[in-house]
Length: 519
Image 1 (cartoon, rainbow, N blue to C red):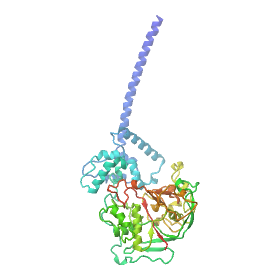
Image 2 (cartoon, rainbow, N blue to C red):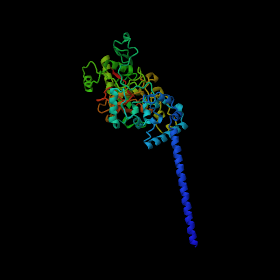
Image 3 (spheres, helix red, strand yellow):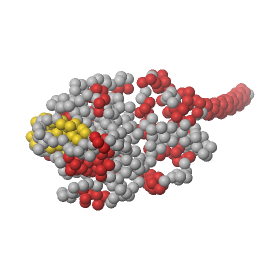
Image 4 (cartoon, rainbow, N blue to C red):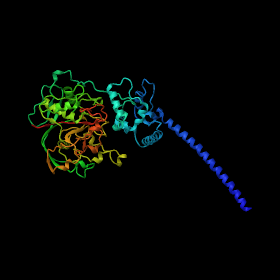
């Protein structure tokens, strides 16, 4: 009988436990549904254009969005912030995980950063925009990539993109930076007219002859039949230690071993080749239509040639809307830079060319043997490293001598914005990368002896570029730092077949300066 009573109590206990569990399960389900609904409604609320405008303190972001084609278009469809800045909602996991990550980042920035310190101009450029515009979102809305009134060139470019999307690894925003936020200075069309010089109508002041050199000293070169002149600096030859020692911060293997290099005397342009100089070349030599590259190479390689075939019109405006004049000319290929030198040599009767890599480093150092031609440790100036998350890099004195990521506002600058190095040369470091006459070889320094005179590397597939550019970290502005062209990558969005031999479509911070041989 006692055993039966225990069995009955045990049975009732299990029933109560089961009912309690069922109650908690139902309660949890109801709470889960409520939390999910609340979460969804929260997400919806914080996905509105108003909440985006409230949280994102980018100045004029809302105003520029309202002026864009995404709001002002003939379809009557209004594109919202989340339509561009989050993956499409049908990509459920990617959509909500991206929103969560973005929310965490925004909250962290709000708590620990001051929006007054943000570089908004840089945030609105391609390098940053590609990080925050999922390509799936662009294609979600624009299933038809061929709207009315597209030019033949635009259709060709879009067809090329559709056929090579994976290979190009390119996002729509690369070409349509002004679609979501109006940018009045953004241009995305083919240049059809020659830039007009402010002195073009003044034929009386045209230079009639090039400058005569009577001594090895600085001189001002005049380009005949133009208004253009530029300064050339006389640099006495000498010996220096080329490369970076093993204890130099951020030094790389292709900068070693250090060796003693001797260079002969030469003249070097005070500044990088400017748009004024390059447009003079373009005006005198431009190729009408699509001259086959083989014909251009054949004509320009003849030793007896008294004229050169110059560039064809580029896609878009190569000055990026930043302005011409004394700013450095950019986006031309190495071949175009060499052809410029050939034309200038014919026009002036002198021997102009690109500097060798050894001449470039010798000139950049200006008689010094430190990381830069001014005082300072690369670690102090660089944004690299753990502590840079908490403490800003030192900006002096590097900002007085170089245009780089911390002071460029993501564009090139006029040469007068920096001080010259000890040889009197401006922008040797930063602003734009500069072509050299050498082919790139990562092992080049180890293939010669300890002492070498006027070295020139002629074997390789890419060309040496030096000096870093306006997007570079200070560590890449060291006098010994080396880099090289990436020909195919820099032409990946060029829709022409064959691709242009004159203009790069996917690099902006590339230019050159020239040297003149001493007679």
